[in-house]
Image (cartoon, rainbow, N blue to C red; front, side, top):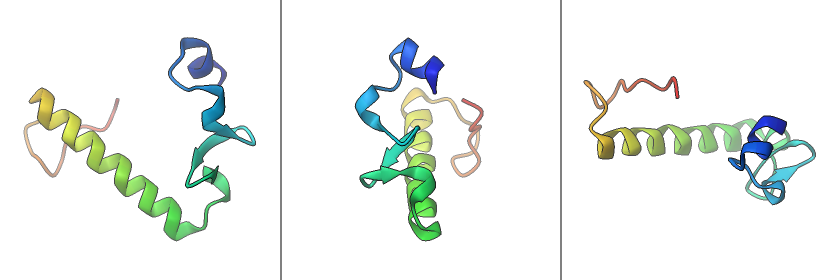
Length: 66
């Protein structure tokens, strides 16, 4: 996380107990169903960004290597 903090990708207030905050708690402390929900949101946002940038060959199988 330190590299992301130093580069300004993550703000200090976005962290809880050394992990990214999600739903007001550190990600590692979320129950499994909430972790899956957050992961689904991230995947859908990644797809949307790739769609906006027209950087995909198959909508349902975008490269998530970013």
